[in-house]
Image 1 (cartoon, rainbow, N blue to C red):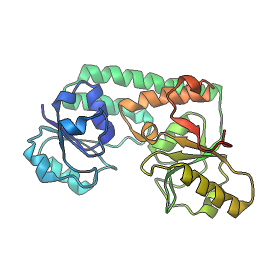
Image 2: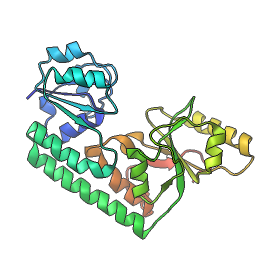
Image 3: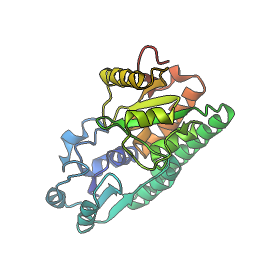
Length: 267
């Protein structure tokens, strides 16, 4: 089989399904498995794949995502090979998506195993959120200049709500937000994602200074969070569910550090 994946999270998932040797093309953002882009052909980015280069690879399976890839590119891929198009809006959609990818690629048994473990991890997270609810309101920032946040109708927001948090933002998808609008939402927690914008210490400091200038009041708690963990649907989903569960149960020191204070006084 010759597989091209135009979705980083699905490239990683294919490898977990034992199909790394079948991958012949991926995007420049496909960083898992490490070094894959040096071993197979990079066909461009998620938004600008080189369709002619994909054609030369003679794929017999192509994986795309409704949101990450442009409709025109997806349609062009359909003219080259069978295409699997996914768009999980919630972590709950992931087990079914993994099973569907297994059927699409002939890796049914491996997919069933990962899907079952993912469903269990998600249920355990929900149970933990019920037993030890936080109910803290949050904003999850994905971009700066302008600031953009994850709205209610997103995979990211749904994951955090499973863990007992509540999105302060009622808007759908990824709206732009001015500082005064964020202040008005009055979130208790602000998460700064590591991707697509790689928030750094200077960004947290600038945000805090601007917040205090506008309000003159106490800051929300600021956390930096692993954007890959919260937005890469697929094999990553079960690991994130387990990490979030450990964090809300107060055992974060034993979990991968997907959430950490952004500033020394944000703990």
